[in-house]
Length: 281
Image (tube, rainbow, N blue to C red; front, side):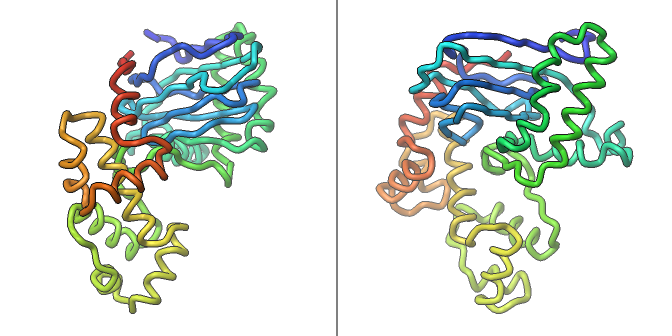
């Protein structure tokens, strides 16, 4: 990108061939007419519909759009790469930009937007590459980010543990529990221990945790362990059995079964898919 504020690539193509990769710059990627394409972001693996829009703001988060079962011969992909300062004293900490900064921090795990949000910013994305004046192009892109930052249905893709993002919460009690789980995920974690940390009865804590996180406690723990396991599969040469036990699973067959159910592939397939075509740009 050099000294440019934005890099915009607006392409028409018949297939996705670029390998899985990660890069220093932030990226907003829009895909149209690509039903059946497989989108991989970190340890998230999903098949997309006709439209897809994802924001990624982590230099370490691998991602790729793979052809999979897509039969379209008129795929459009608009990739917008940029960089902004997310430091606590940066420009985005000013009041008008608070929602954009919040969205950028969430997008360290990859942030996927629903169709209603995509359609709301579609005209601006559609015309962005034709804006010749750099100032107005940046202004239009900022407007896109602001509109997306108002979304109430955007969802993160990679797990916090895979993306190496610190756990956050609007509840101090939930944050204490999450930090405990993050520190002790390799060991057996008892409901009574977590309830005690939160100062609640086990039954009340279970309801409280789901209300604040949207997930059952057991689901949250499994997701965190799988995130760490996925990261070890990518970053190390450890055997699958060793990774299984390192991440708090005490049964290899159970680990393989849960991994395949959640990730749509076995641990060995996950490792192979990442290693065979991974590049850094």
